[in-house]
Length: 285
Image (cartoon, rainbow, N blue to C red):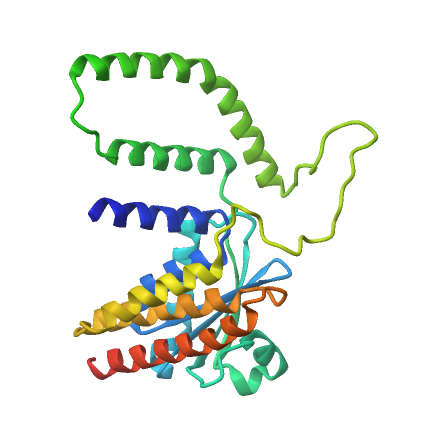
């Protein structure tokens, strides 16, 4: 169970580092749960629009909250996300389409708003940190009972393969890191005069991309089960964060998905559940 938890946390961190907004929200909500603050976010024209909500203005004091969010996001260093606009407001009934509501009436919606910039992580430092993180995971992975001779042989052949491929892999990663550092993008196709580049977005998600609807249902089912036994403030804050992420995932289902109407309905239900859990946590303060 512990290994599954570690793997799950590591997977969320990797997704956040790659720029996944849903993963960034989950990490922020977990880090800010002790202060009763929960977040919502959307990437808008290269700027991460981050909304912080709580039940009282005291929980949303600007200077310490902005600095804490800056430290969390800087530790993640999400790829291609450097500008963050942080806004705050008290929890409201209507939560869907919040960015449009805020942009239409910022004075009536927000307590305050502040934009911050994350420092760009040196590409070699990012590469080193990613490699170190992967190495720690490989060390932490449990190994079954295998004879010493078999382990020695396995390590020998693994060393041979790694030694032959490491230089090429290092050059590839350094090149990729430099592209990321300079803000460049690789061409989608490399070939002769017949190569075509299309800028139109794909209407359907990548076959390997996680399904937000399925992810949300799984999160909601687990939160519903754990909610029957929640007793402490920390447990209710954790439930509020999980219901919030489930709502955000449902809200990210694209309109041309045949489950869109259901997703919108569940996003509202999950949001209400998150609000209820937050109120229960606040009552135990």
